[in-house]
Length: 209
Image (cartoon, rainbow, N blue to C red):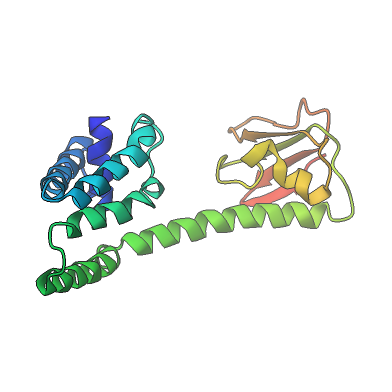
């Protein structure tokens, strides 16, 4: 849990730098200690930080499922905690505006937004292409269940989610069973298929049977 605190606070302050896990966790714990020191200066700060801890308590237990999206609400409470030590002071308002501006500019400066956007566009394009290939092939037909779909990048394909919900929604048929498997060199994923079988070839989805 302590490691999780460091991990999330490093993410919250955009201090998640490349390197060993201990490095950015240590930096995150330093930020957490600073926020705790500020929080102790007022009841609002204590309440805000306590709310942050309550919201983060469950995800801190998920050591293998960490994600910056879990900071969606805690981010706001951390900001309230930091501002609580300087109520109704113009210098605090100015400092807050400057820090807010830096937080908006910093991700673009480090390439974080560019890399994240490119990742989403590439993986999204991959998923979109596979589904459009399927829709084009099966627009006037319905697959024979159980359906086998072999792709090179499971998880990023559109069929893994919900174990084939994309097909059931497309055909409006809840009875369709789907098995998504990872392509392996020299393996024939359709050899033992009893229903329809689709295979990704050079980034395109092809119906084999």
